[in-house]
Image (cartoon, rainbow, N blue to C red; front, side, top):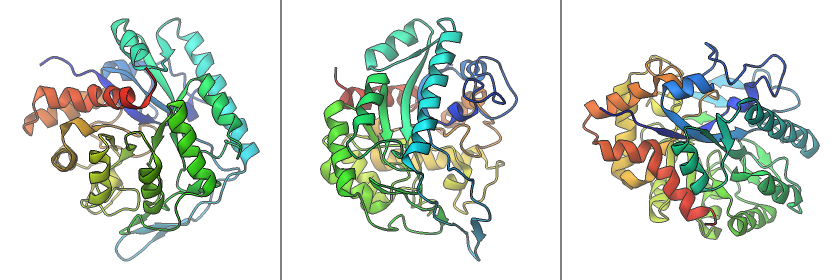
Length: 350
């Protein structure tokens, strides 16, 4: 079989890059740590992806996980101050630019579908800038415009914590994603402005009321860059059937999250999750919304993935398992690459 080229809808690798922190990993050198670097990406036939810039809290929470009789609860995270978030996002942008320079033409920032296609033809790895949580953006949205000028093309309004624009969904299982209020007035203005600029809006980590607020306002397809099906694993981070249907009806995309605790019915954080369990979850999503609306959103470097995949170099194992389950090559190509470019084409200006 021909190798399947992959554009991945979500990773958290920027936080761990040498260009961001002196103790980090050199993205240009193969590592055994984490999930993603350029050599392992190329081994897994990745040609690009959305790279998430995420503001970590000033102080990491302690003892925030409670194991319940049938699952878990994570204490709702505190909001992150704008200045603290802004410094980190500026640092990520500087790190990505430094990495691109050091790559000597092996990597580029892509801001359009044509640039992703050109990078693919030129065997250059395409980085699309994404921000996971809008904590760094001011109420007047001046920084949003600056980020767009810098190349930002995708924005998650929240991570799993509150900000001035909306309310992230706390991590819990089993639990409905309907956990609190939706978007604020500032959040509604953020959606409208992203639509006007052509920035894709990511509903991952948003609670259910916030999801429906985005659905009511946005003129672009609904997209979740990294999520799974609540019907199969009822964690708060997963999408209900009704939410999946809304994404389908707007011709959007669900980026399938390789996080084992959002794939497994029991939500166990077990890297020994078999690939047939993973493939059944993908099959459920495709049966629900169609082969044109499910893609890969791995969450590499942000979660625990199945051992049989291991890291980006192991992605061919996933596609082999999908073939064995009966998926045809056209569906595999859509899942791996085509569906992201389709939704980008519907969202970004030509």
